[in-house]
Image (tube, rainbow, N blue to C red; front, top):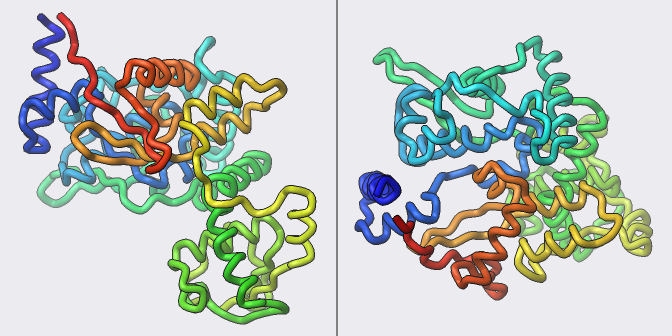
Amino acid sequence: MAKHRSRKTKARKIMGQTGMPFSKAARLADAGGVSPIRAEWTTSGWHRLLPVETWALEMIIGTATVDQVDGTLDELVAKHLAGPDWFPRGSDTELGAVVPEPGRPDDAHAREGAAAFRFALAQLEAEVPATVGELAELLARVGVYHHTCGTDGVHRWRGEELPHVLDVLVLPEQWQDKENEARWRTTTGRAAGQLLDVLAAHKLSGASTTTLDRLAVDTTIPADHVRLGVEGLVHRGVLVVDQRGVQLDAGGVRRLAGHDRIALRVDWDQIDQDEEEGDGIPEQMVWSDSPWAVYRGISMTADVGPDLLETVAVLPFTRSTPDGQMSRTNLAELAAEQAAPVARVIDSLVNLEALGYLIWNAGKQRAEVRHLPASRN
C-alpha cells in the first residue's frame, strides 16, 4: 500500500506541474518523470570532470529553469519529484564522488576526473566542495549556473547558456587533449564534415579573409554549425585560422565574435592524406542499431579501450515517453540518473526491450518508451 500511495502522490505532483490527466501523469511517474537537462550538457565536458551528484543537480536546476520556479537550493530540491531521494539532506548532502569510494563504478575514471578537478580548483584558489550546496555555489561562480537573490529576498537558480569546460577551467594538458578529442567525436567532427563539403564545392584554396557570420551566409550553413565546423577543422589540424597575425586554436575559435575578421587556409593535402589513412572527417552519425546494442557489442569486442566505450556512452540519441514528449539523452546520462554503472543500465534497457516496453525506431532514430507496468502492491 505504501508504494501505491507514493505512486499516487508522485502522479498528483506531475498533474499539478503539467496539467496532465491522472492516467498520463501516473504513467509518467512510473517512467521516472521528466527532468530537463540542457542539450549541450553531455558535450560540454562537465559530466566527465565533476562528481556524479552533478547530474541530479543539473536536473533540479534545469527543472527550475524550464518551469520558472524560484527558491533556495533546498526549496528546489524539496519541490522536485525525485529531489528528496537524490539529496536527503538537501544542500547539505555530502558529495561521494570528489574522492571516489572503493568499489564505485568506473572507479579509475572517477579518480582521474577528481584529480583534474582538484587541479582546476587549485588554479582558481578555490576549496574542494564537500556538499551539494558548495558544489552548486562553485558552479555558479564559474558560469555553469546563475544564482541571484533579489531585493525581495527570493533566490533564483537558473541554467541557461552552458560554457564548455575548456573555456572556463585551467585543466591538466592531458585532460585538455582528452576533452578536445571527445568534443571532436561527439560535436565538432560532424559539423566539420558539413563545412568541408561546402568549402570543397567552392574550391577554396589559398588564404581567404572572412568572418564567421559571412561564412555562414556564403555557405548557407547555420552560424552555430559554422563555428563548430571551423573549431573541429582547427582541432584536426587541417585548417589554419589567423586573426591579426595570431594563429587561433580551437578554444580561440569558440571565443571569436561572429563579426571578427579572420583569414582561413585549408590544408587540402593533409585532408587527402587523412582520408587515405582512414582518419578523415566523420559522416553524420546514424545509429546502426540501438545505442544499447551498439554499446554491448563494442564492450564484448576484445582489446577495446575504455575511451571508446566512454565516447559511445555520451553520444546523444532521442528518447520519447508515452505522453509524446521527446528529449535528448545518452547512456551515460541514464546511468547517472539511476546511480548505476552503464553496463547495468544496458541490461535494464535490453530487458525492457525484450518485454516490449521499449523499442528502437531505426527509421526515426529514437528510443520509444511504451506504457510501463504499474507498480504492484
